[in-house]
Image (tube, rainbow, N blue to C red; front, side):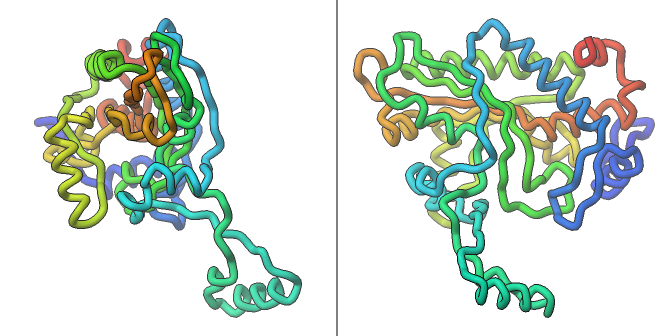
Amino acid sequence: MTDATGPTYDIDSFYQGLVEHGLIIPSEIQGGYGRGAVFEDILERFNDLVSRTAKDDGAEPMMFPPIVPRTLIEKVGYMDNFPHLCGSISSFFGGEKDARALSECVHAGERWEDRLDPTEAMLTPAACYPVYPTFAGTLPAGGRLATLTGWVYRHEPSPEPTRLQAFRMREFIRVGTVDQVVAWRNAWLERGLSLLKSLQLPVASDVANDPFFGRAGKMMAASQRDQRLKFEILCPVISADNPTAICSFNWHQDHFSATFDIKTSDGEVASTACLGFGLERVTLALIKTHGFDPATWPAEVRALLWP
């Protein structure tokens, strides 16, 4: 919604506009709505623009399914820091008698999940996680750079349209010496801002922190901000006062390198960083800024997305 003074922010009206224009498809799951053809076209066009922007970087393309080993989640400490966001996959391991009992529960309208047991897979909570084990060993002198587009799951049910439980991230993951990694992160922070500003989005960057769990998590979040380990690019989508993070930059220092024994060419523990564009969030930011119909968007924006 807009008025004579500029955009107005009403979550319900924005959601209804997305539905009425066929951009999203309602679901019984909060944060689990479907995406219409136009929404997907915008998302894919933006992802293509990111690829064109980074085409000379030499990033290694990778692709992973939206699941990771339970052992990886344990190894990186995810359950220590973010247990409230995890998604564990359970399945049925019983025999015919157990299956009949489960079916009876389903048809009686009773809860049946306790008849399932955990598998060795969990839903991917961060698109970059499967990449770090592939870097194990000694790196070439220039380090390595990978890129992927992946589905992410986080248990954050909400009716707010930018707060999704399942969403896609376009990620770049850099590993090397501290100087290589920090220089890369700082350069991409400016590059990311320029890219999003070229789409006429009202963005700004700021220091941020991850949503660590509990009392100890508050201290970890404060430390992360103090060390300036995480930056976000923010854009007003559902609020002017609390803009939405549509891109993030994380410097992990040696956390993943020590965990997976990643060494620089001179034998030191390596450093890692990642950047991620939230593809659904960027799409929603474009729709909020320019309108529900891409045909009416500024010609300069359309030329970048539909060259």
